[in-house]
Image 1 (tube, rainbow, N blue to C red):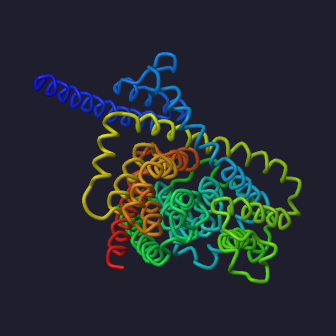
Image 2 (cartoon, rainbow, N blue to C red):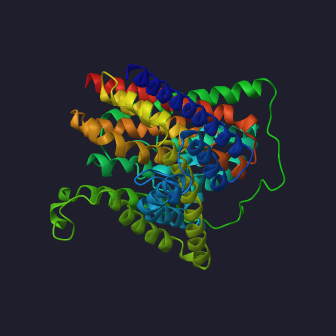
Length: 467
C-alpha cells in the first residue's frame, strides 16, 4: 500500500509538471501568435487546446467521463459567460465613444486640452487627453482612435519620434484612470458583483496610487522621449497622417464635456441613490451596481447626440460602428477569457491556486498575486478578474478581508501584467492605430503599463496595511 501511495503521488507530480509545461508553452504560443498578427479568435482556442491536451482534458462532452470537464464546454462557458455579463456595457460604451467622435465632441475636448497645455508639452497633452476621455467613460479602444490624429500632429510639431505615441496613448488610457476609484471602465466595476462594493471602494488609497502612477509614468515617458531626441531620433512623416479635417466645425469644448459629466454624474447618482433626498421617490432605494453604468452611458449618449445635431447625418453610421466595434472588442476579450477558463482546469493552475489560497499573511497579497498572474495568462484585466474573483472572493471574505480594500487591490492588480504583448488593446494600439511594430513601440508600452502599475499595486497594499 505504501508503494502504491508513493507511485500515485509521483504520478500526480508528473501530471502537474506536464500541465505546467503545457500552460507555459501555450501562453508563449499565444503571445507569439498575437504579436505575429494571428486573430485572437483563432489564437485563443489553439492555445487553450494545448492546455487541454497537456492537462488530460477530453476534447468534447461525449468523450468525457460523467461529471468531468471537457475542452469545448469549458472554453465556450468562459467565452459566453463573459459575453452575457458584459455585452450591454461594451455595446453602450462603444456607441457612446462613436457618438462622441462623430459629433466632434471627443476631438473638441482633445483640442482644448492641447491648447491649454501647449505644444511644448506634447507628451503631457496626449496623456491628459486620453485620461480625460477614459475617465469620462469613453472606451479605451475609442480613445486611442480619437486621440491618435492629435498625437501625430503634436509629435510632428515637436519633432519627437513617433514610436512613443503608442506608449502615450496606452499610459493615458489603461493605467491611473482605468483602475482608479470612480472610473466607469469595467475593470473597476467587475469586483462589485463579487464583493458587494461600489465603484468608489478604497478611494483614499486609490487617489494616492493614481497620483503616484501618473507622476512616475509621465516622468519616465518624458525622459525616454528626450533621450531618444538627444540620440538624434526625429519624427518621420507617413502617408495618411493628416486624417482629421482642419476645417471641420467642432462644438464648444464646454458643451462637449457635458456627456462626460453626465456619465460620471448619473453613474454616481445610481451608485448612491440615498444621497439625493429630494429624488428618493424617483430613484431606486438601493445601488444598481454595475447596471448603473448602463443608465449612465445611455444618458451620456443622449446628450452627445443632442450636442452633435449639426452632424446628425453621421449618427446612424456611428451607432452601427459602435455596435460592430462592441462585438469585436468583447469577443476578443471573450477569446482570452475562454483560454483562461480552460487554463483554470489544468492541474498546474489548480496547484498554483491552492498555493495562493493557503499563502500565509495578508489576503490582499494573495489576491494581488492571483489576479496579476491570471490577467497575464489571459492578456486581459477584465478576464483575469472574471476568472479569479469567483474562485477567490468567497474564501478571502470568509477570512475577514475588507471588501473595499480587496476591490481596489484586485482592480489595480488586474492592470499590470494584463498589458503583456498579447493584450488585445496593446496589439490594436501599436499595430492597427499607430502602425508601429512591437519591437519599436512595446518597450515604452511595457514600462508604462506593466512596471508602473505593478509599483502602484505594491504601494496600494502597503497603504492598506498601515491604514
